[in-house]
Length: 200
Image (tube, rainbow, N blue to C red; front, side):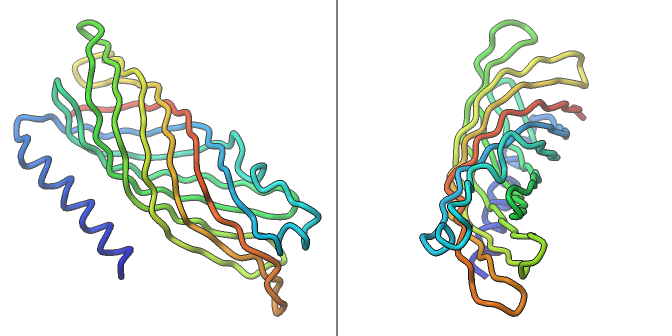
């Protein structure tokens, strides 16, 4: 329930912000990038998996996302969902982020802007390894992003960005019908991404 309340608060905040900025234009976009995670493992997991390199599970892996928001000449509000997964040494993880973000623009010319801002929302971490019971957990996500936005026409823009997030989502490894092998906890994520945006 606490997770749902947090999500509703974030969505209400974005909605109120959009209403307050009635002259803003709406945009929607798709993103593709690469994500690398820092994942902490319990001592039990380390001893049971021959010192598994958990930072190698999601490392420079393809990340797909969608976004929608409002923007003007000074900045923008937007909601983003993205998804990344990979497996390493028999352990498969999936990470899903739902983030509300705000960026401030710094113009470099008529069509180019630098941006920087903050994000907050939810991260869902799922353990989907073969031979283990599936397990999921949802935690908070907070972080910062920065990049460059290029307007290519009245209706389209592209951007290159970097986002860093901290989280506390965790998941367990347990063999089917067996004891717990250990725990994985997502500490941070770093993502470099490209986005194509359409303006309404």
